Image (cartoon, one colour):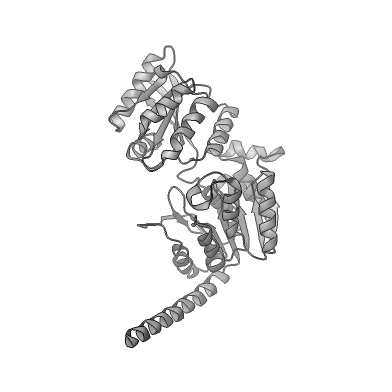
Length: 397
């Protein structure tokens, strides 16, 4: 028994020594990178990572960027994108990526925070990234089982990633949440710079130059980070325009189905109500919704809490002509839609969920709408599901 205890203690001590050596080596690698920009928040992290990374490249700064969103990518200084393959996402991945890029002597590393749990967000920042600039995009209701059920609790969870003795650029506008962020940053002796949620003046011209639909608040965050780094506006705008959009970015794709012009708006990656409403209003204000609007609601088996929430949004806050129900909980969603006054005749369910049946249903719907040859399909709620992945691939290729 004594022998076993002694062996356990020795093994534990060896583990501590090993971990300490690994931490020292990692610190050496990460602190050799001059600009370390750590990006957190509920929505927009991947897009903001790409925008800032491209701005730095346009300035001639040797920059690596790493996203974690719809499709994790490591982007090198030449813009080449390497998919990050993994069985399960783990924050230790950040250490291995730093080790990998350190051999190529980067000047900047723009990285999306991987962690959701508050304690792990703190570890990501203090043990792995040690950011010179932190970026907090926004606070929304998501991952509530791990970050808290109220916006205030979620804010405090996200604030665990705030860097010490640095700068935090923040896009959140809610006064109650702004106060929490200021107080938490003050505890870490970090200065907070808040940005607007919309572009003003000549900066609005940027929107016309983009090939995809970018949120204005993402652009204002990127411009502010560039300003903090002393990068001129002309270079910053060039970087934003040249930045390659994330695979999950909001974009409109055009297809012809039985001589009907169908525009597919992929909003499946947006799974909190506030962000979806904002996207809908943005699309409406930019004139993208002046057609027949068909919404698809795909509900996952493991996300029952989203069913009624998104049925409410689709029937109360969005002007949809048709709603197609996919995935699970169709009866619950249909009942909620009808209770909210949405016509039962305009609700369709796909019994056998495959691409052929989906396209046949779209053709049937278009035939029932006289004198109309144009429609939007707005995909919503969840991005991971066989039928969703099938029709996203069809519309985007």
